[in-house]
Amino acid sequence: ASNHAETSRTERERAAIQSAGAKREITSCRKIRMSTRGKNVNQVDAASFARWIVITGFLALAGLCYVYLTLQLHRLGDRKKMLETELANMRTENDLASVQTTALTSRSALQRRLKEGYLKMVPITEQSIVRLAPIRPATDEDAIRPVANDRIGK
Picture 1 (cartoon, rainbow, N blue to C red):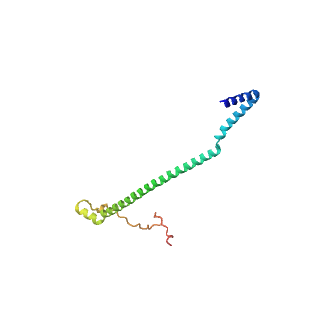
Picture 2 (picture 1 turned 120 degrees about the vertical axis):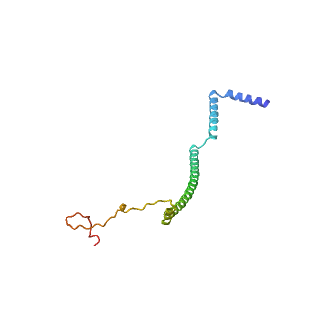
Picture 3 (picture 1 turned 90 degrees about the vertical axis):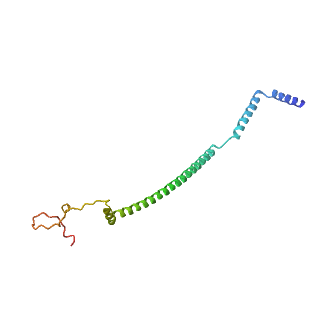
């Protein structure tokens, strides 16, 4: 306890000796040291920090794009496979329909259906038939006749 009393008395004596200006100078130096001490501990390079944020954001965006495009590629591949299967089925159905059409419209099938009475056919009368005769050349020089280029074949 006596040591503590001596220390505080010594400080009081020193304080009495120092002038008011010296006291202000000491306290201002302490304030500067305290204020700069806190700033030095938490100082961060803003440019470097911003650069790493941009790089990280770019990599994250590239990763998301990669995942999206990979999923889209698989989805479109499945769709293509489904459409190719559907196209093959349609071609098979088309071939079957073509064979069936050929079988049902053949001469023998039509004659069989005619005998069964499923089809009714009416014979064409002579008056309904139109016959075209070959064009006869006109005997007159002044007569109108179709134009023909005889020099093509020569």
